Image (cartoon, rainbow, N blue to C red; front, side):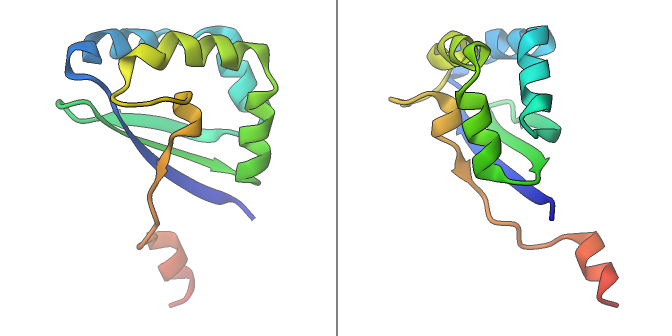
Length: 112
């Protein structure tokens, strides 16, 4: 069964442009690693104040997180992104503030 995962992080206000630029051209090996470890339909949204909301779908959240942790590129990416976030003392992918899904249209329609 596919899990829908949503998380939030906060980008420092003076790092918003740099964060956007980095995500406009994510390294090809990082993109491949995400896909190969089960991060599907992955998107990140950002408010003007730097609040990030990320969303992805996976068959197994822990397996996807563990898979990325085992890749060399993830370590490099997390190190490159670390300076952009507010008050993180661990890599961003270990600091996700997960949000609970309270509504899904397709789920409810399937019960009608």
